[in-house]
Length: 367
Ligand code: ATP
Image 1 (cartoon, protein in one colour):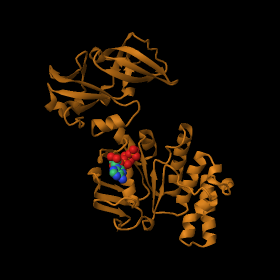
Image 2 (cartoon, protein in one colour):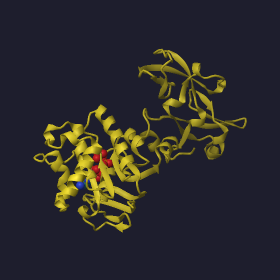
Image 3 (cartoon, helix red, strand yellow):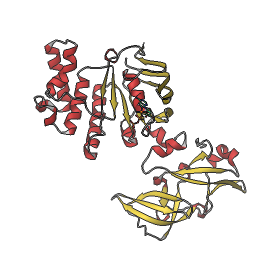
Image 4 (spheres, helix red, strand yellow):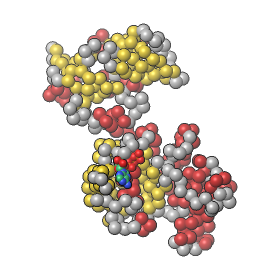
């Protein structure tokens, strides 16, 4: 069984740089977990700690049931795929994939069958005699993955493996990795700064910032129920819109008052907002939860917001509208059938059941 767990792991680099700050998480057997966050958040260091390429300042790292803090990388039964592939230029594809097994003195027949099996899985059969320089970026990446597959490790570690590929190939390789995970049924830990990649690949994703874990959850949970404003803004494209305003109570009903407009809050949120009445909060709304009023039937007038349409971006099936409330700029993602006119006022409606509220001081989610 290939679970991985980190308990109270801290990594402080010389110069007092705390790259990983008391990180705790467990990866289940056969799980695909993605560490995601902005540059410098500590995701690569976390992966390198699991690989044994860095030594933890404090805390314990387990692979399977074994504490591996003092186990050298080669004995951890992991395989790591790097961003830069790290192939041997003078060796053929076959030799590159066979190299690790040869070092471990595997019998020739076993090496041959493992290399051919991996080549079959990755569609590399016709390229086994080529040198890395004779391959495209995507093919090189596949060889790097093949080299890790032949070792049949307990855990696969990927450090931004797709970032050197062009956009189209990245999308294609992403699907291939997904397929590979389903086929191999292996434990995989994957690092990326790309939230789309994280959402698409991860059974669960670990969102990091400043060396701290912000949230560990399924992609759907992270998207729909972010624990704080950082996660809400980092996950999702275009990013969630944020508006500052005040919660007010009038005739037993709660409203969000932005300054230029006022909208009614759904009753299901009243309990959570009880302590915020007459206080300033941040409202979060995703771009797909703002609708052109023309496409919404029966909207109470108190929920209609008039905005000025400033920029319109056509993407075919949908349109991004950059709109100005007079105080805030928002982006709405509306149906391609809408017909927004630049510099004109437009009535929009927020889906109030999908609204988020954040505490302005702590930035934690209120509801
Ligand atoms: P990126 O996406 O840019 O690779 P990351 O989230 O993977 O970023 P890390 O590479 O883990 O971030 O780095 C986390 C922090 O630790 C950063 O502030 C970085 O500058 C610092 N750091 C990383 N390696 C070292 C090192 N060897 N010595 C000193 N500081 C380091």
